[in-house]
Image 1 (spheres, helix red, strand yellow):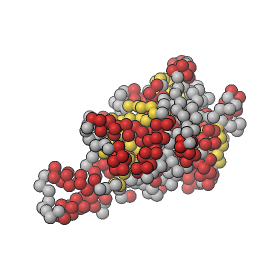
Image 2 (tube, rainbow, N blue to C red):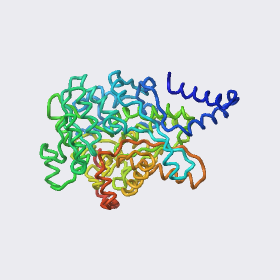
Image 3 (cartoon, rainbow, N blue to C red):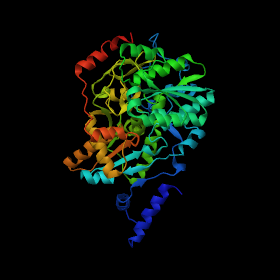
Length: 490
């Protein structure tokens, strides 16, 4: 029996228990459903109701992104150009225009370890804010590694395994992607080398230990183990590192060692594709409540969890003209969507990746050492960038102290300590809920809780002891970082 059937039976029983007859109208039935949902905290799907396909937004976008360019020839990239770096099936997904792509049975079997994830009514937070808004969050923190990243790590490891690849390299910021790929590679018997952004390596030692527990080799980046790392250290000996640095090192290793491929945790189309299982589940769960979101929010680094929660809802905006707002919440210290430029740029620091058409702060930009390490990336994925350019999504930049304030408020009222990345989405959700209170109108808000912060308590310790600060990027810094980008694609 499905959860939806159970809910329908519950509604029926509630009517009968009230000593009554069945509801005479749709509005009466909706009122009964609303009464039940007022006391329902978690909306759950059965495993049998988990989506069987990922959603590919590229099939429905009114304007397709401009093509990626080969870094050497500056010509549009072909699938075969990427096959030496990524698994063949992942490359096929990267270029696909199919609306839905089937999830392999073996991947779905592993998804069942933690999926479907709960949709939770944030009733405690609503009460604390005294808002008429309904706030829901998708709880991706229930995965074995505590974040959404496993949604793409499992299929990436799977597709490399069936191709016969033996070794994988990757980067990681806060360590959530590295942790996810570590456990996925362990399951499929793949060797993994992780280049972890140095400042996060130092700030989050337990993330390193998680990866090592799952069998990965973890190297702080920039390092002296690659030519790219040595070049960066020669220019900046005390560099805190960045995701761009770590990508350069991981890509170099993948391109120079046999039976090795690179896996990326965000930015690219196939990663966003895998993450759409979040929003596809949320759609079904919200249908059970009788609600539809007015606002969908996700924190934003390169775009993986943001795409996952928002893309399935955007397709209703394209097809049916749904009046829905989509908001990307990014750090004020790394504001590519709010203050960056739209240009072709490299996905890494050294210039080894394809040129991507994206909102960027420049591949040489090194973000401030904030504790939301997973959001310290200079550029946005091509799909999100095009959607932002076309006005389908909004972006909001949040100061570090405001994000931790929001995270603490959420924890004290919902019981979950959020990852520093996720606090950005929470901060925007709170802003929207307070605006609803000021306007005196109901609003349905959905955000993605991309991960918990139980391995990030050192960050909270610094917040409570007053050691954290806000970082603002000057317009001069941005101008310097993006200077010359307009010439890269020529």
